[in-house]
Image (cartoon, rainbow, N blue to C red; front, side, top):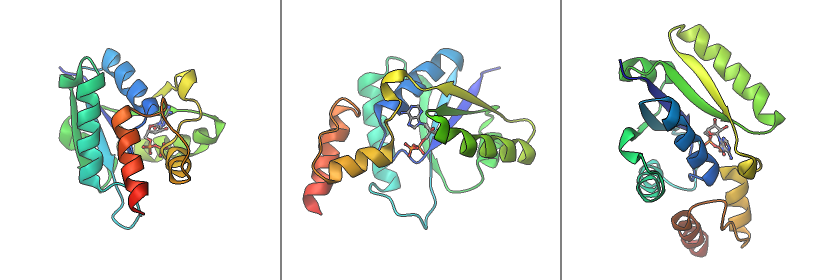
Length: 165
Ligand code: ADP
């Protein structure tokens, strides 16, 4: 049986921290689904389609085993998506202490909703400890360079987005 894990997030946009989790997840699981989980009522910088396209392009460019990664989007209950995909694991990355409480709650509610799905956490790579899509957007919107924290393609796309605003 193939071990499939779903890696959900907003990925608005994908950062080097996310890529690190994907690469390491591929060492553990046979297949990864990077899931752009979105809330239609929540504002985002990139559309769901843009985020998916960017994830695709970035993975092709920088992840050796990208053929084992699928990119999808979903607005419903995560455990339902996992069940329908045959995924037994939800993969999440953990950064600072501040991530912990929220992630703990999410893991517990998801387990309550479906006991067959386990949440697995990977500790962030130390280089990406303070990298979050939100901080990246904030810095880029004020003209700060986020080179090195995101792939070059994302850096360019952020510059384009904020030049238009
Ligand atoms: P963010 O919290 O940056 O907006 P997402 O909602 O897209 O990111 O996060 C998806 C998952 O990836 C979450 O489990 C989050 O903790 C994890 N993640 C995000 N950034 C990093 C990082 N720099 N290192 C490790 N995991 C991360």
